[in-house]
Image 1 (spheres, rainbow, N blue to C red):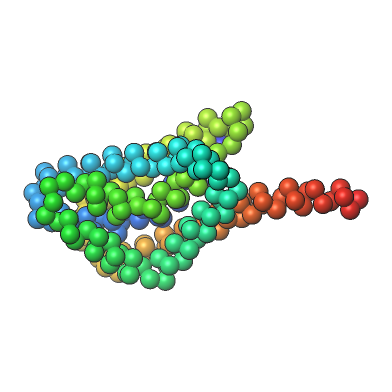
Image 2 (image 1 turned 180 degrees about the vertical axis):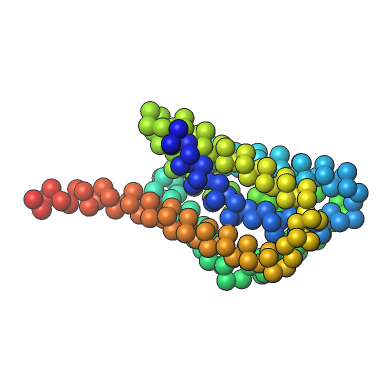
Length: 224
């Protein structure tokens, strides 16, 4: 059970930081502002479900897809840690620039009939950053008889919890925007970015340890 809790405490903050549902809800509000409340509620549910599918596929199939191309777990952790840490760093220093880019991506689709999958789910809610984080998290799974079941339970619970958060923030986007205001949104975005950068560094450390650990262990007996 402790393994499941640890997996959840690792997965949920990482997903929350990269998804950033609060800023996403403000974009959702702007894109769907000309639609009736019933339609907006339906779109919010669709975005949440699509986001769950993206996260689950990336969590549990992404590493196998990479393995098919001969990419090792250590390489995935090093690359994924760098991507996540740099993403957090850029967002920490310029959150407004990233959100403005998302607004530009959403703008051409304002008159489309179906905007739930594109662009509201991909790339605005669960884009390349979320996919890379989910793949990296899933790649850190333990062996079959070393807590894999608990790890699967904890990470799946993190994805489900993230789905609920996405649905709630998008469904109540109007109230959220009024409650937080621009200053509050920027503050939450920066806090999430710092947490994301820390998680990326931790993943990077694990990858470097996977690479250097066996080499250092092999040299110690040789010197002895």
